[in-house]
Amino acid sequence: MVVCKFGGSSVADAGQIRKVKSILESDERRSVVVVSAPGKRNKEDDKITDLLYRYNDMVRSGQSCRPVFNVIAKRFSEIAHALGVEEKELAEKLDDIRYQIDAGRGADYTASRGEYLSAYIISMFLGWEFIDAADVIVINSDSTVNDETYARLSKRLESGKRYVIPGFYGVSEQGVVKTFTRGGSDITGAIVARALSAELYENWTDVSGVAAADPRIVEDAASVPELSYDEVRELSDVGASVFHEEAIAPIYHLGIPINIRNTNRPEDAGTMIVPQAKRGGLAGISVKGGLSRLSLRRLMLFKRSGMRHALLTMLHIFGIRPCYSLFGIDSIVWYFDSRMASESVCHSMCERLKGEFALDEISVDSGYAVMGIVGSRDSIAKGCMDAVAALSREGIDVVSVNLGSSEISALIGIHEKDAKAALKAAYASLFD
Ligand code: ASP
Image (cartoon, rainbow, N blue to C red; front, side, top):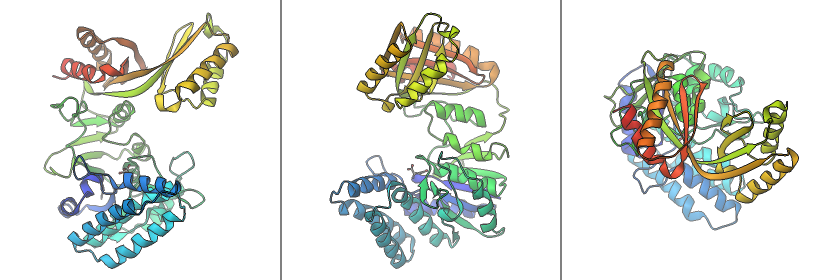
């Protein structure tokens, strides 16, 4: 059997949901479907999940927020009406949800209601059974999936039946509604695929597969027919957004293939994500911005056992968890997400580290980005060198190069202001 997950744009309105129905009906192996909350219908539109978070913030700060809830309720009522789904029960559900949010059930409960209502309406429309994710998915405090989930799912799902399950949430070990991080319906789809040992996990979105570079920047970027699990994780880590990086984990050891497909162009084959890709050469490039760079120096730094560990512990105390590292004999560079610490926090941290570890130099600067080049082992070194050459031809400053820590990716540090130009130049040199 095949587990399908449909993202926000695929369930944004009644017209999109009709496409979902015809996709499901065109292959009877497609018997379990996971859905997101309605996404944007056009560029100016709001995602239901964003509206729900906004509503919850307003409730918390005591602002008048009824109009925001009315927008959410209207959107669901319109979808139900257009699909001929009975509206009385939906209206009761909406009333209860508003009551619960106003009573302070919190951000996770509030955000989860987008997926809950979406799955409820779609199950009524398809005539398939609805399963509340809160009854079957248990999420640990570190956001990993609790093994109890698989026992619950196998008990609940009977073969030969058809089900709709909301994505994005489950419950904590204490039974309180808890969400994954944004885009987490991909993870729910993977969990269900694993529980059922599915032959295939289809992930339906609004693009025909994973592009070799962000098509909003490189307009003609080609979609890649095949990627390995590890390549997808590396690409998501440097900002590619088609598939949630944590969604590989539930199916990693089972080797279930994932097919990224386009709801608006079901005839396209999309991208297959498999344990080991047969394709050679480079897979794609991506850029992640919004980074700060901490660099520090001390003579004989690496002779001092335990110092690197102690420095990292101190960074954690200041709320900083580095995402990329570079080490020299007397120096360390750590990149981290700039949102983790304000300028004043960075200033106090530098003062403290300098004094406590007798550093010769320490500084934190913001405005950096990292470009990741991902592909097969034998293509990475040449790809990295070609990309660096392309950037220098364009006069783009290369701040760091990290080649070899992962055998299937190279990371090039650049200034964030150059991110778009760098991606275009590297794409032209590596893929055109
Ligand atoms: N609706 C949630 C979000 O917007 C989860 C998802 O779509 O996967 O992040």
